[in-house]
Length: 315
Ligand SMILES: Nc1ncnc2c1ncn2[C@@H]1O[C@H](COP(=O)(O)OP(=O)(O)OP(=O)(O)O)[C@@H](O)[C@H]1O
Ligand SMILES: [Mg+2]
View: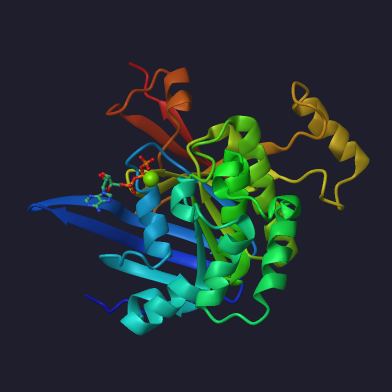
């Protein structure tokens, strides 16, 4: 078999996974949590990952964060091949290269330290110079300067998560990973937590990957990748018609007419299905059922000038 040559991804790519596999072994039983996952995340992106329970979202985040090693495939983060990291490099990467926010705020915060002390603690451990100033800056960025003296128990769920975001970013990592950070707050609070991610992403340029169950929340994010059975299966891309300076007024009007049910400046999303390396597609169920096509049926595939058309076979 020819040897596969791995090239480092281009400069603007923060994360690239190719054919990533993670197998957990427990009491002799193997679970394939990632089954050849491909994913590219650009520097400075704020992206979401959705998928049902058990689809491999946390596994992916743990692998990206260096908490778990992949079983096979390739993984580059910040231009470096993570499969080649030795233990020392991995420890350094976990301490300096990446920040984590967890769903459970008890995992993010120490209950007997104030918000400010919570942000200062990792800075103290890593020997950061002006800790007090850095902690104030970070709390200000998440809109919590006025709560710096409060203990976690005196803060709301959303505020606790915003402190967690300040902590995760205090050491200035290039990559911020969040596993269901809004999982235990209501949807209104979830929006404020997401806004804190967005602000920090814009102000510092940190690349952010957020895992969420909440499809509504994912509408606030520019790009959302859906994982199914440990593989990427589709992508939702937000169309930035408002920010897109090159779009003419006529074009905006036309787009408004098309999506007349939505408010004029509501972001619209375009769903892209990812074609895997073997050329396979996962077509959304609703498309198939609207044509009466079931799994296991045969379909006709025709190549037209600029498109490939899938047709039901007449029975
Ligand atoms: N440490 C482990 N040992 C054995 N199996 C594991 C381990 N961690 C995860 N798994 C299995 O791997 C699969 C993917 O799990 P993962 O936690 O990544 O899913 P998830 O998408 O994060 O789900 P959820 O939305 O419920 O958090 C599941 O079948 C799970 O049971
Ligand atoms: Mg999970």
